Amino acid sequence: MKANRNQKRNMKAGAQPLLRQVAAIPEAFGSGKFRSQYAALCFRRHPGDASVEVLLITSRGTGRWVIPKGWPMKKKKPHEAAEIEAWEEAGVRGVARKKPVGRYTYLNWLENGDVAPCVVEVFQIEVQDITEDFKESGQRRIAWVSLDEAARRVREVELKTLLVNFKPKSKG
Image (cartoon, rainbow, N blue to C red; front, side, top):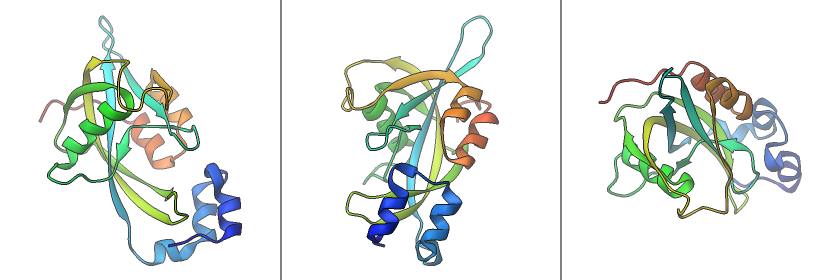
């Protein structure tokens, strides 16, 4: 679905809240054509107190805080795609839990001007390895923050809720 010039100008860089964006282009949701994406909720535990920090990265286009995510990949299961996104976008490795810990929705403004309403399935990854040499290094900022701070930084309301309520699940 192509956005017109006024819609693009008004919506650039997520300048408006999601509901206002949706109101401006109701046809994007009326079609029922949500696209799937897979995300990695990467976390690490502090030794001693077992508190949890999560990884946030900046998006390449707008610089807003997000979690690593991407489109489905051929011959890869959703949790495997999340692992690959975490490696390529943030330089972290770990084993993703096979079942999602949640999902959220957002409007993805594609480079060609199309608007893609997306449902993002989120897979937890306990980080086991970190490197500074990864595919998108230099294109993003990375931050390890508390769950509350992560929820303050991201824009998507459903992702905020997922972060505030996140309790790492056992492997499986």
